[in-house]
Length: 466
Image (cartoon, rainbow, N blue to C red; front, side, top):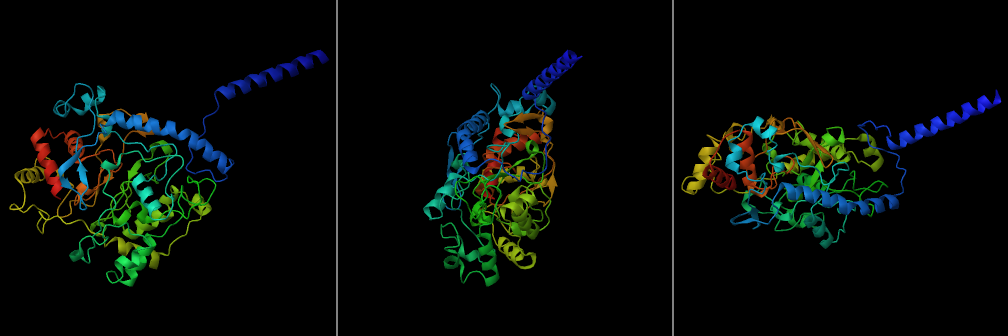
């Protein structure tokens, strides 16, 4: 009897060992959660060392993806420049499958492109530099400028670098125009506006309430990756980021992030920082979110988007809720003063003045309002309908996992204004289109327009004049 019990005990140990072995080789999949971990078990120094060690492989993987999708050779215009002189990038930069031309591809049906897997990889949703990790990532030009100004490397992450080359980004620092003082032109005087020079530049130009709103836009608040906690992504603790760290001078530096309103992580979309120029004429805010006022947008960003939409994490990292009736209102009022750059070839209605425009621009305008169907959504004078539209791009490709991101249906996307569009590369909500030529090729394919090579060039010429 005793021997039998011993045998049963031994069999039990053997079964347990077998189960443990199977578990170790095939651990149960953790269910996706809407919440981020709050109680961090790993010491900060250990986590930082681990992430620094992993960084080269992560960036190598992302750059391999970019080089597969795009020709990243520096090609810029000799003639068309942004306000302060940076030449715009020219393309298309998107690579095609071997042997294909844009004309051949444009003649094919969506079903044929999908079945033959010929949809340009550069037209697929673009993943974050490290999609499973996510978070704000700033271009090196912004980090270097703050170091030069004595603010240290507070925007530099130890685990990631920004991925797109700077010649595909807006000029830095960008010009700033005010709806209240168009006579002054670029009121930034070629500088990055900071708390140090705010009064020097704008005292006597803005009223006290606007100055207070501007001050708040330049004030650092805790953010998911930039704060004082042990799960930050900067070497040194930080007070956080300011609204105008991303929307520098009321425009954009091209920095990237992930939208906060989608789960699980693989479904979240990369978001290219949109310009704040022309906020006063917009009625929807956030590229995929239907926020209905500048106040809603401001409050959502500072309370929600900064922390991946997780109020528990926001509390942990030290969120400083702003007072809606005064602070948020002041910030919103200031944002509504950021104006589009001048467009000397446009009349009061946003249309070309024939005597000032080239023949290519005039032909492009006719296409924009005719065959190309652009004006269905992009209505002058500011070239937006303030609505959201579903392009249904997924009809051209099969769902696929790309560097931790699931490329599948995208849903409705906000119609961005096209005024000053040449100063805001890269394009589309996630920055997947690097040049205006890429934009025209993308919409020619998606809308099945079958534009000729000359028609596409003319359309680009018109966009450059807006």
